[in-house]
Every structure is written in structure tokens, then in C-alpha cells.
Image (cartoon, rainbow, N blue to C red; front, side):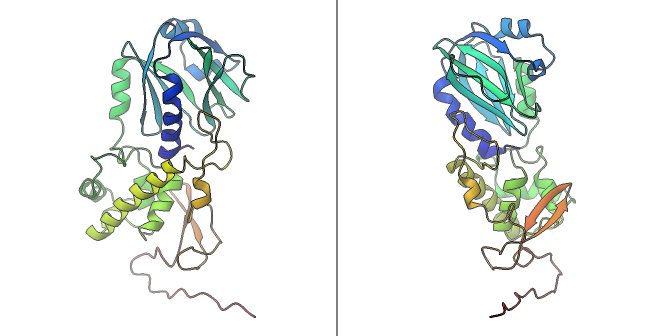
Length: 288
């Protein structure tokens, strides 16, 4: 599922082609559920004539603000994709929605697995959506002190706690694994058992892996593309995620995997040891 860096990458590539554009029409494919329970003609009536004034991101959601204070909320989920293309372009693969713009382009949404949604919501619903989530980890409000206070109330396993969007917005499986490796913290540590230095390391690591992910335009394994159809580059720089069985890039010990909260988790048993684990994990000599 796209996480903060991927959704932020899409947001940035939507700003230039969308901000200032006026909606001229709407076309649905066979999967009308992409716009929720509203009828297509009602959705069109709400959008036609409205101007996009800002493109924002909150957690893993895209918020397309309209000039009447309402907005279009896009949740990509697992395989959703948005693109702005000329109106005469061939349909995207698995295309479900096209919003015609006043410059001859269309904002299109495609989704192979049909889990994502493109919803029109009012002011109050927009506000409620934004209030559902914890602080943005790249924002000024996310400090080591705030992280420590939030973790102190959570006795669960560290990885599961960090995936809770009410604690911290936008983190997912990939970037939690990468942050925990960078901070040298085992994913099954009790979240409320970190020392102040460990919490500061984790705070720095979260911000670093997310900033790197944004700069590299996200992580693409199969379907993720930005609004211009370009894949990300961060998959070439991952240190642990998806690398179980391969040598740790820090100590060369084989990376392992464990299931935490139903999520497959990659980590280094030597760099990310649990406190109290006295095992001396040595590399076996390679026969010559």
C-alpha cells in the first residue's frame, strides 16, 4: 500500500496540472463504487463548475480542495493510481473514473483491485478526516518528546504501535522496518520500554527514511506510479524491507523475518537484538 512518501510524490505531481483547473464533466467506468454510495449524476452535479484550489496530503490520503470549501478525497489503497492526461488519451489500464478539466485534460483514476476510492466530501467531513490521525512525522509538531509521550502509553509491540495512524500519520510496513533498522531497535520491543536515547534515535530514523523516500519519489515494487506515470526509485535503497535471508548491509549477518501484528517484518537479529538476548551471533566461516 502506498505510504507517506508515495502519496506525497503523487500530490506534488498533481499540483501543477490541477490547481486552478475547473471541472467540466465526469465519466465513470463499470465500477461505480469508486465514488462511494453517491449516484454518478449527483457526483457530477457537485463537481462541475468547481475549481481546484489546492492539493494536500493528510496521512495516506490525497485532499483535492475545491473553491466552495468542499474537497475530493482520494485513497489509493493497494493499487490505486491517478494521472492527468489529455482527454483523447487511451483509457488507463483498470480505469474507473475520469474528471474532465477546462484545459482539455482529464484527471483519471485506475485501480486493479478496486479497493481505493475517490469521494466528494463536505467541509465538516474534511475536518473530521484530518483530525483522525496523529501528527505528520515530517512536520514541526512531531518531536522526540511527543513521540516519547505517545509511546509511553503503549505497551504493545513497537512495530504494531508505529503502524497505528492515530499515533503517527502516514507510516506503513516499508518505512517502519527501515526506521527500526536505522535506529537499531527490535520490532517486538515493548513500545513503552524505550530509553530516552532510543526514542531520540527512533525519531531521527523515522524522519530520515521518510525524507529519503520523498526525495527518491517513493518505492515501486509492482504498480506504484506518480501522476506523470513515473516509478519511484527508493526500492533500490532499502536496507532491510524485503531482504530477509540476504546479508545485513551493516554487519553482514543474514536478515530475518518475523510476523508482527499480522505484518511480515524484516530485521537484523544482530543489529536489532532484544534487550536481555545474550546470544553471540557470529557469521559462519565460508569454506574456501
